Image (cartoon, rainbow, N blue to C red):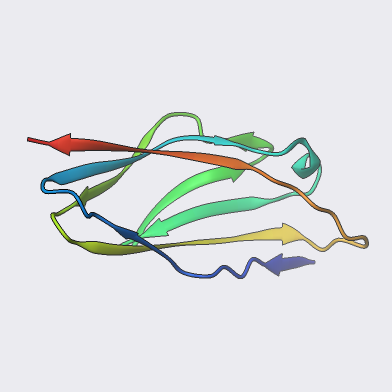
Length: 102
């Protein structure tokens, strides 16, 4: 049986004076996720980026698009994980890159 991942919605806000391109540069999965049959995706403006699937993290940087001056976009996570019989804790790292568009 698989369980759906429930995620809060996060906001990205551009407070700079120029537009920026937003990229997911890296997703480093916690070793505790091995064997959990986890699928994890990042969703922004109906664009899906696979962060972790089949025991592998993000393979290359992926663009989330352009965030205009004073623009706010939302991101959230979706996915599934095989039902677990015990509680497990993990802490993964995701790096975003904000490149000014001049």
